[in-house]
Image (cartoon, rainbow, N blue to C red; front, side, top):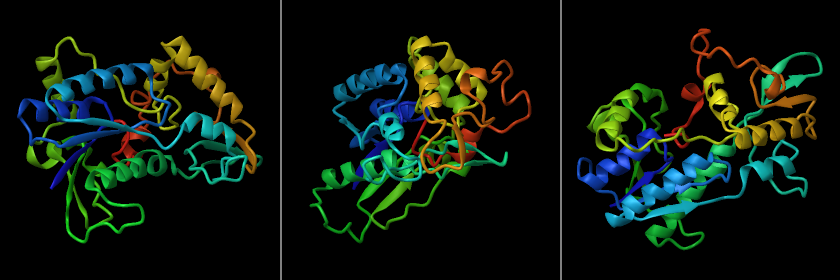
Length: 275
């Protein structure tokens, strides 16, 4: 049975990998990080450190990639096609219609840039040839770092060839704050960054403020937000922020939580990003 961690390089999946290394959780055979090409620089630095820790324990960490999400988005017409006609997986961007109505573009980026690249790597690790059918029996335990306070993110696998494993939900129940405390206790000098694409429309205002603290990354998302405003095929304007206002004009002084608003990330994430 192949035991593989879907590594987001955030708090939960970092702790899961380190617990496996330390023998506190089941030993993993591998960890796979799906790189969209648009993670914060702090995430890439942290991933390099994780790879070093895992290598010492002889657990390989693979980086896989389906493309550059940011570049692909700017080449696209948003509705599923790049400018050259090739299909592209859309981001869940916000749309302000010409009639004043607001909406959101269907999200396909998680599936295309996270789920499928990881599955392709699993096929490779299993020795499956291109076009060869998945086995009819369970051959993979796929681990996720979802915590006990995020059970709504638990998913049943869509194939009979794998089982989804959620150690922090079922085997060693821990909330996110407990996992963070474990990391502080065992790795006090390690600051684990928030793992999510820089331009993820599900960011809370707190998270946008955190990005704003890094001038280079803030300039990056502002430029992207401006570039997508008039995207081909859309009847209206496109935005990164749910207010349907230019990101650099949004009042980010008060957090979503203090205003009684839901954090979209917790309600929308499929369990492949941000853990």
